[in-house]
Length: 102
Image (cartoon, rainbow, N blue to C red):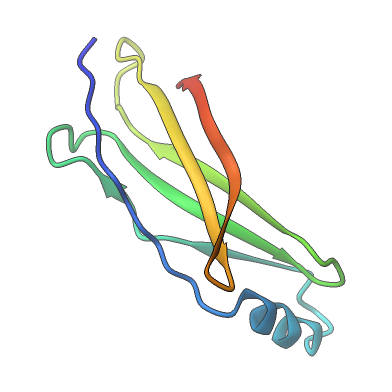
């Protein structure tokens, strides 16, 4: 199995502000923010998206990773990732060194 390493940064500013705005809309309960798809230039047939779920009335956010591709069931992808956030310039680990076979 070939190992490919790359780094992706997605910057979302003021999540608390987004949550405050969401609280002003009675019909919205959940907002899903999604990054643009990203992939390694060495293996473009597999891409990912980062998602942040902002739920009205809660003081936390859900963060998850979505894999897009490969198109064949014969292709296995092991994904090792690290997701973190910056809170007032301090790093907060969200998910670290989890390996999943997609």
